[in-house]
Length: 261
Ligand code: TMP
Ligand code: ASP
View: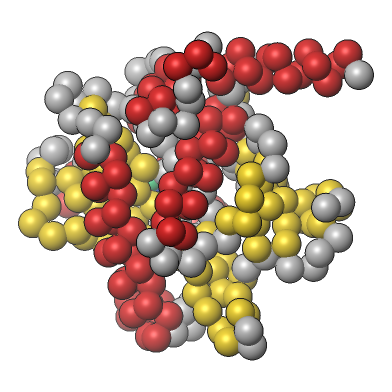
């Protein structure tokens, strides 16, 4: 597979063309942003951890029949993914109220929701990803009714699966963000799960201590983001004990090797 030109650069990832028109390479950067880019920094090793964690979750979701864009992980920072037309909506799934919903609606932080709550935000950085309703989506043709219905069914299965997966390793899945894309499979139009699922896009709390193991460590200046993401990876069984020196050291090692060549 040959890596071609840069097609798109987002806040945390870069997409490159390949010699196959249906496939692209997704590169995970170390950049961290919050509050729609108002706060930014670079956290060495974050991209490596998100690449591994996202690969783990998406390949597990494939196994339960949730079609997604992942083809395979290429190396520490890159994955081959299927090229999709991204639906311009961020689907937010909440099991416990925290973050923006507590401020927007005055809900007490930590309120456990009776049912998973799905919110839609328009994917538009200039407008600050505003909250929208299903009627807005239909009115402006951002997705069809059929697509929304399919996506909602997938979201509930993904949520059930991920709650169980994280519960098994002592982590509460508080909320997360998903994106979906359109693709033709065997001449049929399909909607599949796209983008990453990682501690950048989920809120993950330790089940007992409620310690935050996600990007809130950066948003709220709590520090120790890499140890928290490493802990998530270790509990999911992605980092083996002996190689658990930390992803940062692994990154350093790989860049030293590259320089030597
Ligand atoms: P929020 O409480 O800030 O609305 O975030 C809800 C969840 O969605 C949380 O897990 C973080 C995730 N999220 C993203 O991944 N990207 C975003 O741009 C936003 C606003 C939230
Ligand atoms: N990803 C968004 C941003 O860059 C928001 C967030 O994750 O808090 O700014």
